[in-house]
Image (cartoon, protein in one colour):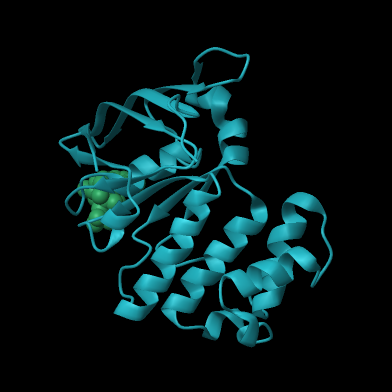
Length: 224
Ligand SMILES: Nc1ncnc2c1ncn2[C@@H]1O[C@H](COP(=O)(O)OP(=O)(O)OP(=O)(O)O)[C@@H](O)[C@H]1O
């Protein structure tokens, strides 16, 4: 599922830390059902950008346009509540609660939909992520790859239209990396818009529709 018009556009993103420009008039579009990679050296500003896009970090300036939404381009501040509803940011090390895998999923669902424990949707994402056998295991004891899959299962439950992922496969072995990438491909095919920060293509090129390269505060886009 692809669409020619972006669902979300950011322009004029500026961010400085201690007078150093990390983002300098950066601009970026996100499309339903498309996956873009965000490439850049260590310290280029990838995590900073993702946190701004997710409504978590205030930029010095940024204009945001939600396509198909009646309001015109808005400032980051005004867009923030809508960004928080639309965009989900997944950390490199997923943040998990004490308690079982299923508790982590049930909580994720109830946070937005008031759902009950162990319902059909939770069972479905457990199966989707290949975590059925670990449903009752403590989430914090999972391997790195299992934690990533749990984070993706939670994201699927929440139905976030946009997912931002910060190095989701770093420190994973080949098999876990492939399983994670397969889940990402499935989310993209369901219409989720994705932006994945990574240092190199690291296996993502097969699911990417295009790339943004961040260097010296500027984002340069290229197609896959
Ligand atoms: N709160 C802050 N205060 C000052 N400087 C910061 C702050 N947060 C990030 N930085 C600096 O901004 C730059 C960009 O950091 P960021 O974490 O966004 O880079 P990155 O591209 O994600 O790096 P990596 O690939 O190593 O994760 C770095 O030089 C970092 O030290």
